[in-house]
Image 1 (cartoon, rainbow, N blue to C red):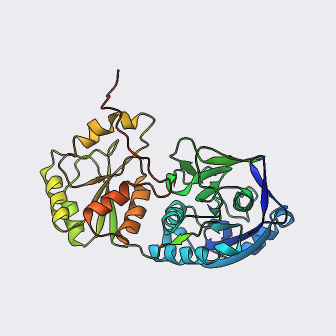
Image 2: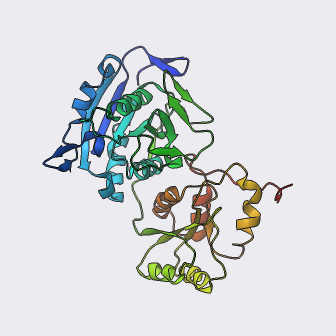
Image 3: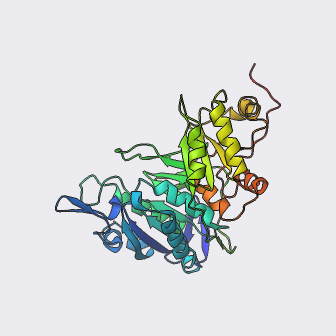
Amino acid sequence: MVKKRPLGKLIVPKQKPKVLVIGTGGAISAKPVKGKWVYGEIPIQELISTTKRISEHFDVTATNVFRMDSSDMKPENWLTLANTIYYKMNEYDGIVVTIGTDTLAYAATAISFLIQNNNIPIVFTGSKIDSTQLKSDARINLRDAITVAGLSDIAETVIVFNGRIMRANRAKKVNASEIGAFSSFENPELGKIEQFIQLNGEYRKRSKSKPALFNKLENLVATIKIYPGFDGKRIRNLVDYPVKGLVLEGFGLGNIPLLDNELKEGIKYANKKNVPIVIASNCELGEYWQYIYEAEIGTRLKGMKVIPVYDMLPETAYVKLMWVLGQAQDFEEIKKMMQRPYCGEVSKFNSKNGKLGL
């Protein structure tokens, strides 16, 4: 590992930092051919060589593991990517993954669980506009990602997009067409890259620790969005499908319609079949959620064998449940693992003494 000394918000190296860029496809490397997108048509190395000043400051190696639309990516692809990253980490100062934006946050979140105890940055990026267009964001996002990977002191899996640095498992795609495609549901946001790299709050820093690789995900996990008039029989149907775990995306803090006896019976049926039910929220919880969570969610769900996951994003809950079920089968152990923060994905819940307001 290159020795570095800190200067302001950057780690200034005595020699060029070594960065590995792993391409998987997406718009950032796509090119229209006969009216159809061809992913990976533009080599990552070509993008790097045509991105201003990258070669002056970084020693970059590029490779491809996939050439695909990210919407076609499956959990087994995440495992392949995790192994590719893990077995290269000791050779580089940082790693960048380029990927399509549709499931970028899912893949980055998966890597945050599959590779833990990081000692270098793992940075995911992509672009909304392909690099052949005049107003493409491909090269600026790639440059920012390489800069964060090579120079920042962070040692986590992050998303770098549109000048923002987001903890992977706290971010999601919120805009389908504009350059500001991603939003972080963490306060404060992890950081930004402008003239300098600015990081906020607590984050894992570079170290000499040995990363841990996990090589198993349970694919038979499903997520259901709760809606007015939700038919609780859907839970029973999914359990019989079968699924091994289920995330319910509830209203507000994670509320579900308890007057629906079918829903409660569906949850009991899942309990009988040893299928854990995770309760997530369909919205940002806001600054005061811990003051009202126990009264609105804890009390309503009391006596029900479900797993509330507090301020964890539903997409993150889905990926994390896949990871947890790869490690544990006992309900209490699954619950303990789902509610425990491993890489900043969930806040520890501290009841605010049952206070409900003024």
